[in-house]
Length: 326
Figure 1 (cartoon, rainbow, N blue to C red):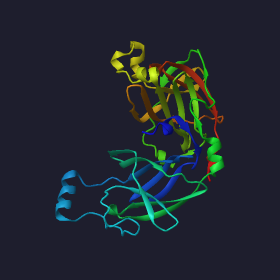
Figure 2: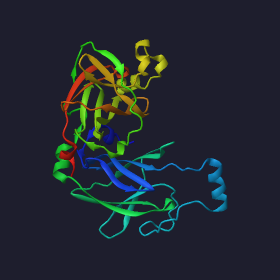
Figure 3: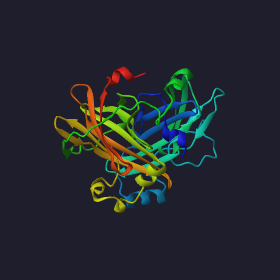
Figure 4: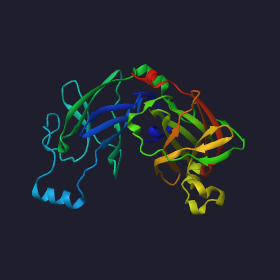
């Protein structure tokens, strides 16, 4: 994993939201960050549920029936043998340079299939043309043109998380803690950004970074919190939960994010998480859904006990989603 991606903030290159909405496939942008070294694009794609059970699907496959009509290949090479969503950059020559995701996860449930894909594309400024293809499910090759920030804007916005300003302020205020009720299914790929990525908390070699904050439904926000720890802090953060002090075990040592409402800290609903790292480094990414504030300012309480980050309070003014649309 590229350390620069993990430890560097870039310019917001797209506010988020749906790029493709078809019966067979929906694709939305969760995050798009531009750096001088490349364009990082995190997508979430969904397919509708298959009404057939596993036995019926296998029977139809053996009989060669029941599948969608395969879409034509125009930019995809005939030798391509992929069976999932492909993404490419359309070059000035009219050819597509196809990319492979460096993060790829799939989830299936009664709402259908969800695919979370993160791509690292070549540096692009001012404009980029993306090609999406999934012929096997009947989805035709589709070109989407995206406006991007200029090179100068990207260079100004690119900063190390170890040098960037910190939004949060350490606090010893005692608040009553409770967990928010689960909101059920939320189409987070529809969300439009309402605040830029920012460092919420940092002590020594550990930092908590808000990498995404988007309005997804009336009254709901989608947030992504990334914890980065290196050297001794990284070694401590990745330690087995059973080896940590008992006070750390209820949250298994992972970062905690809560919304402050009066004298309460309402812990946000965790919807997904992933972690990676070596012996001396650790990175954890958590995805949350939380209630939006009524006054336009999100009051957060964050901590990461395993990395020795005590509680800090961060107040984040929220833009209207319409203000961030390009």
